[in-house]
Length: 498
Ligand SMILES: *Cc1c(COP(=O)(O)O)cnc(C)c1O
Image 1: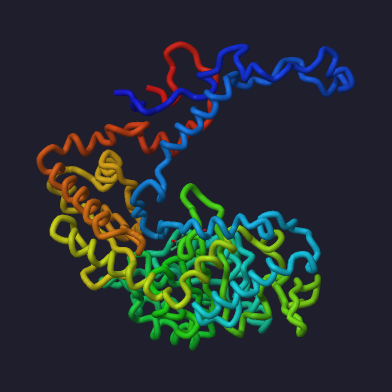
Image 2: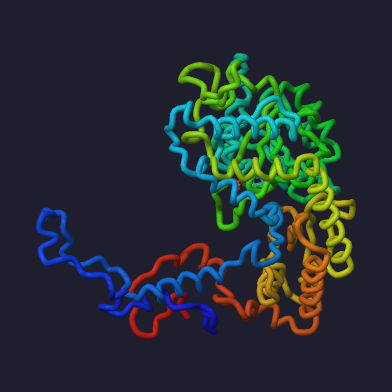
């Protein structure tokens, strides 16, 4: 069976016909290139497709319609907070004063942007209970690295050079151990307890004079609030280590839990997740980092400074020698930061409702699915939850991957699958606060219907998707030999093979 579905379109190269074009634009006069040195001229024309303008426009508009997006449908991708992104943010980010500012403009010409950044830092500090915030990191993963580099600088500043390890729970996002390694630490993995939280006994056993930091995601990647967080932080600090919070799941706890107040020393925000920037397909994002007092001296430079007269400027080179230095060019992902600013200003004190509604939606879905799918953790979840197809698989052979593919036929983007790694045949489902009851119900109905199909007609599930531009791929080959680039093809060859 071909993997190519009916909706897959020819590439723009396949649409090309020699000599075809807009047709109405005069060609350059003969001799127009005479003043270009021969060494700089092409011997053969560039291999560009030749099409009329209308064909080019239709090609790209039709291609864009193959993309699945939050604006087109429900996007329950766990750990990613794919909420609706208010168009107000897009308006704000396009204001010429922000969008047109040159990154090297002198402070006198950049007062509005500097003030926006300064106020955003203050708002994020308020939301998180942290003393100060840097807006430089380009995404959550870089925020983690920034945070752990500050932890390293902190221990070094005290002459404490023996701390070479970072403790990370086994349910953590892959970026956590990657961060620890990139910052030169050894990752020590801590197992989860049966209730999904960190196993405190194993944690205490791993903690010691070599521990530089612990990295905890709260709520965890299982969608559960870390109930023993007080105990974990107390033990961490008693051992002389610092506590990092992965704040990717902040959407569950706004206005309810402030990590700085709870005792975390440093955390990152994924503002593209929690504070709404379109972020499917990989970015751009922004990963501000909040710190408690002890880490303020190490924040990346330059920071935005407010002078006594109310004007704003950037720190000068060398003004704060304890800083870990720059982690990103200029001010960070300013366009994303404007969107976060607009979102925070628009919501104000209603932020708590964002989280309360997200948590309610997730618990409602979990309760509706519980009779059909295995729900490994029974206690109330936060903004996302894990469901598992392990029992369906044992009965019918249908796996979580098949269910995800079948959801595409039903018109949905699948949830996150096989993450966290600790749950067999897991699906991490995150509805967010912006979906209506009817949308959530329809999605749950689709998942229940697929479970029924698994019992009555498993073949239709295991061979899905049937109605997508590309049908079932061999996952291993697709990952090992990704075919992402057009190559000239002859005869019966098709872009995705047969
Ligand atoms: C998304 C995410 C990250 C990484 O953030 P990016 O902004 O994608 O770099 C880290 N940890 C968790 C739990 C996440 O969900």
